[in-house]
Length: 254
Image (tube, rainbow, N blue to C red; front, side, top):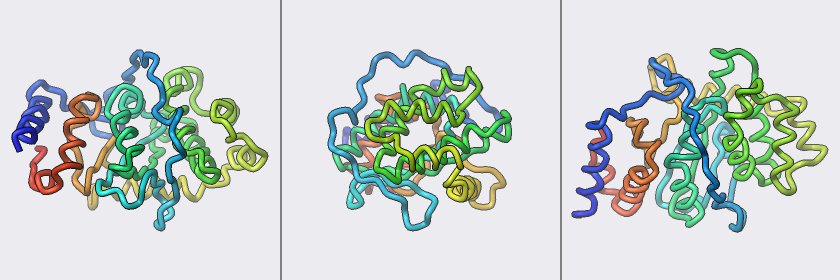
């Protein structure tokens, strides 16, 4: 239990240091969080393909062992710069490793509200393309490629059909006539719309969604956005939640 208390102290320190950041879609957007991504090697590079499937609700993409004891739901908008930071520099790398180790399963809900705020339809097109990649078992690899290139893509006009197809070339075995047509014709437009509706309703009676990125571990929402962007602290938190579920159920994040 001593380790859990140390982890709890680390989580509390985040708030004390003023890392209560806001994500995209919240009342005070942070703006661009551009940062050097370094040369991190993808944990998926040499791994066997993870199980990935569309959940029964038709709006959630589930990655990992369905029997994993720890469930992590992630809300993301492909054009959100804070999500980009979470995916490339923050806690997402820890989540990927624990999903590969079959300790967690990750459930993705994709929003596309940034299109309405910034103009264009890049988020919608990216979500549609991610759904098309799922159809051929290439979601995790393509998801990683999109966020690894998000800053450059946004600076040059956002996700377009041609950009999404070009980035798909980086995923072995993804490009095909059926995938290309799905991207070009917005084949999964209904999925895009349903996913946004699921995001909108995630806060219950609140009119807006929870903001992106938002992470929910075993049905408990992590409110401290700054924690999501600190890889070491997020590792402490997620490991504690996985190894000590009773402690996590009782622990108060705020």
